[in-house]
Amino acid sequence: MDSLVDKFGRQITYLRLAVTDRCNLRCKYCMPAHGIDIVDRKELLTFKEMYRITRVLSELGVNKVRLTGGEPFVRKDFVNFLEMLSFNDKLDEINITTNGALISKHISKLEELKINAVNLSIDSLSAENFSKITRRDVFSQVYETLEALEESKLQLKLNVVVQSEVNTHEILDFIELTKHKNIAVRFIEEMPFNGTGQRETKEVWNYTKILNLINSNYKQTSAIQSEKSSTSHNFKVTGYKGSFGIIPSFTRTICNDCNRIRITATGLFKNCLFDEGVFNIRDFLRKGASDEDLKQLFLSIVSEKPKNGFIAEASRKNNKKVSESMSTIGG
Image (tube, rainbow, N blue to C red; front, side, top):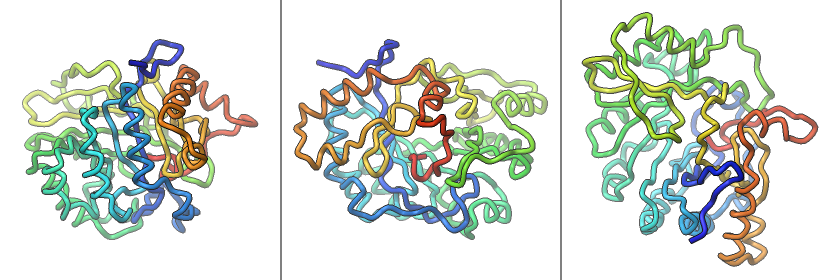
């Protein structure tokens, strides 16, 4: 069987698939207050097209899919798509990243469909600060979702984007959350773009700074052995039920073992978060491409995957730095 291997010998087994560019929140680090220019629905991949793409990729060795957005649960019939995807017996994992505001009524169905894990984006444990970050008053719904997910059969991770002068004072609060809860908190370096160009920050909270703060307050932490391709460096406070990790998304120290590709909601194939997209699969499909055509295309594109995010960003036209909203890229 052919498999997706790049010129550096990295095998691609993980697809991040954005099902929509729409979102019900307006997080400051993701998009401007007025939102972003939403694409016309006919420009989005249909769920049938997404299923076909995923099936072909799974026949080339992709065994893990993460569904993102925007906010996946904003898109009508998303749960039906999950059911469709669950019939792909070549997938070992189907995971979802969500802001949690719309998911609570679907948790039992997700368990039934054997969804593996949910990553819940929650950047503050304070209702007031949460509202400032998201520009929406839905903290109570999101926290109730957190507690319901913790009680469910689904693996739960919390995604916390660390934002200078916004929520850095809550880092230790999130660590304390792992004391009695069996959850994994993931602190994510902020990506300084939200659809309006790259932003300047007064203080850079990178991997080292985040870890130093935690270690200065907790004397007994230990590293957790993670998969080679893990996006996070993971740790545990001795005696605590849960764990925490740090994702160096902007400093890009995890690129060497990358096993991921991305496809946006409009069908743009991305070998790297930092590239500008290398091919539009939607158009290729709608011109009548066969499954074999798709396979050959994927094999060809992945073979050109850049070594790291810095090279990917440098290859953008006119040396243009990344400025798109994460809602457009696929969070």
